[in-house]
Image (cartoon, rainbow, N blue to C red; front, side):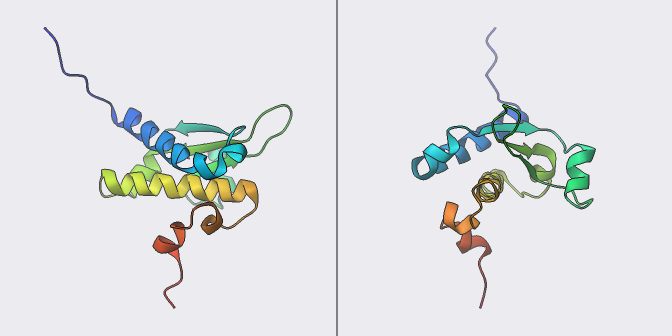
Length: 123
């Protein structure tokens, strides 16, 4: 008996993270080459404390002691803020954009000009 292959929510979420990286790779490939991407279910207590006791969506771990920089996206808090799969994909992309911007010391709009379309000023 063959059962249809299904992907778990965690696997689909990891796919969104990889899709976000691939979308950014064309413009930022060199900068992303050394960056590790990871997914964790929930933020650690240390990540929450670093975020001022708010629930963070991601965390940037800068390079040091022979380790590459790492962007960690927290699956459950991100999923809790998205109403559907399309919104989830956009939110994951924006979270990765924000973390890469922080790593590079630039505005998120520099990393992805479409970021401003969703979060820019309404003036």
